[in-house]
Image (cartoon, rainbow, N blue to C red; front, side, top):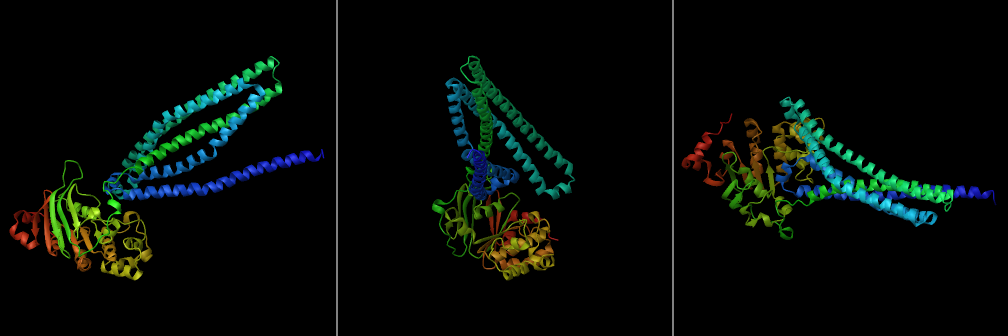
Length: 527
């Protein structure tokens, strides 16, 4: 029996250590599912909120900075969850047990000094860390700025090469990195001060405890063995105290990151959602009306001032006027990418502000001045407005837009990647994909925002049949600068000074309107 005892104790010790390790790993495995699910939901909610914001805010923001905010917050969420759930409670229990053992061995005086040391440590750590939050916010802002410069430069790599500005861009990025470096050094310096202050408190307190126990040993009221035990307890307390300080630092940083994301999530779009989700759109032919519309991007600088325009169902209307007269803005208001500050935008008598966006916009199709393409395949970009379209329908739309032969000649056909923003294709090719994409969507109301401006006149003439097919039988608003486009329209609305000042057919306006005639005389001739 006596010989078996050490073996049993060793076996029990080994089993206990193995169980501890096993339960720790099981906890980590189970928590991984919870934490990653939380991160995914937070990232998805942030992404959805991003797309719910108005385009004016998104266009004025730097994608790199927004990406850093969301990425950093999702990482911090896992760290904060892990620290608060699995570290704080065990450390508190360990403190209480250690203080109880110390009180039983050396009396309440030593335990009180140790408890006071822990209390001072916690107060110092929390107050100093609170002061560090502003430093960390500045560091985060500097990091976001550096990421913004990085992404912005890459997004405009062609412009950089056109102007041989590689050194200039490197200097711009380095300036942002230097600012980040300065703020990061401030964070690390403040961390060093925090750590040093913590060590001063811990060592001072524990030295006082050892001095008390040593005096009792000298007085003969405390065995030397108990001093060794108390020293071991103090050493055991050092580690969780250090962990506790680390927990507070990590959670403080985490709350700074999450606070930044919270501020972003609290941002409301300038376009208010319709009450109770909005009404479903009832298409009744596609009559479009702008009724006394006022709008301006900046306070006190109206772009549209009392614009009124009615486009009957099935009519092709050209919107022309000097640069900055608000032509494209009318299309944005119709799509409800912005709301007028005064007046109404009506489709079939229904105010677009009261409609369900998804119900209304599925009837709209647009070809902008520069068709934006995703860094995906040709097929993905063609199907973007109608993902369920068959291969035959995609090919038919591509043929109508005279892009099929080019796509077929590519190495992977419709599975060929188009590159960032479609830069592997020419401007005209991107525009033809945009026209094909709109054809495939088969909209009830078509918006063309200088859709052929990126094409040469010959290609535009070849595309005339495709565009005619696109607009046939549909209400169509065409922002145009080319005479050939305007001549094919049923009605022309001439904008000037924020209002429609002339309306009629192209021939009628040329005959009766001096300013319309002057406008076209000042337009460059088509080659």
